[in-house]
Image (tube, rainbow, N blue to C red; front, side):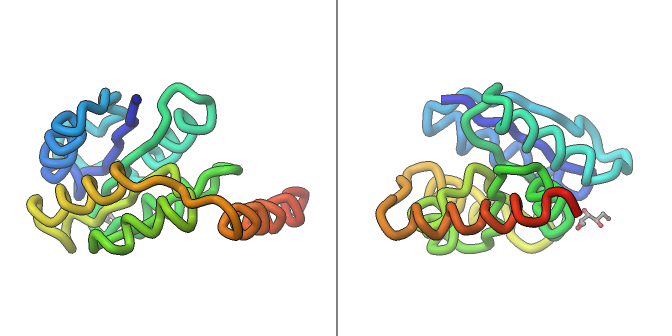
Length: 150
Ligand code: RB5
């Protein structure tokens, strides 16, 4: 399974720990940047990872910025994408089980590398539960369709 990883300068240092945890889970990592601490704009990297998921270039994604907020908002603007900002393993597991999130968002100025790796493990070892959750996920995308021409 392939996982696209993207970050801004605020998330750059945490990306290495995230990549390490992903590789330990035997997941293939595709790095969409950024590749240094030089200032960049988080929407560019949220968009790149979300688009890669949407196009099927990768199966899942992890996006990282300082808080995780901006990059998750950006990723969620790509239709069909569900990016979940999680700063604890329970939320990360639920993001997969209940919300079928394809992208995990992390804030590098909020969590340290050890906790981030636990969050990654929780997200990538959980499965979507389906059933009533499927209906709710579909309702999310009905909202997207309702406002697509606005
Ligand atoms: C960059 O300074 C910072 O604004 C960004 O990493 C992120 O936290 C935005 O939501």
